[in-house]
Image (tube, rainbow, N blue to C red; front, side, top):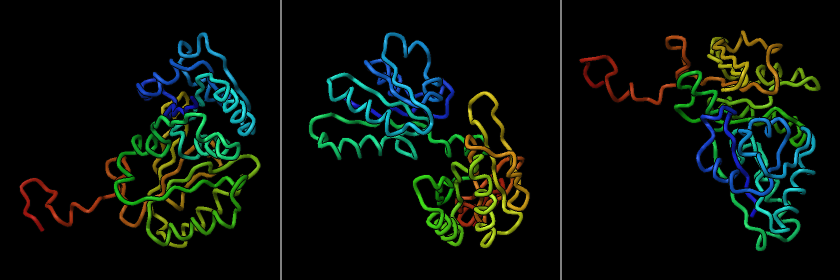
Length: 255
């Protein structure tokens, strides 16, 4: 059995019971070293751990597949949700490429994705349609990323930005925000959340023309509001549209 297990943002309280059960029932726990560190120590006791660095995704995925192929109950732990920019897809690709889809049982345990954790800390920025774009061009050409940003901005989606800035691509976020600014007002609210629900957490509500890109790293998620998003009591609010159908003030009448 091979299972991609979502750890959520990192706080043990946001690890789902299903994820705990999957890890507790495993013989082998695989994952990026930083994510292995997020697993409660008692769940790792007595289990083989397969750990690799940030660029070792294929290596650890193949090792996990081989362990499962040998009949060992194997889990691949992932930050956030395993099916969102994580390892569920790579595991399934390898099983497909090696003709193992019918012989190695595969499952995914869902979790709290990073944009949901960031949204919770900011208030209610994702109450209407939104798009998620990763700025990492390791696997996706930058020209494709630019096109997606441009079209999402033109369509007035709230935009969640993953992998915004690294030492190798320290200009990608500034370029992305400039593209979005072509379709958004300078005062559009932007939430910047670093290390959500982990030590060192930071939550900042700013505007599109004032984002401090130098303070952003790979553990940061940005939520760029749409044309209706506003600040509300220090929170970020994207109205769903109830105000157009119902009176929001106490004792008011329907519009």
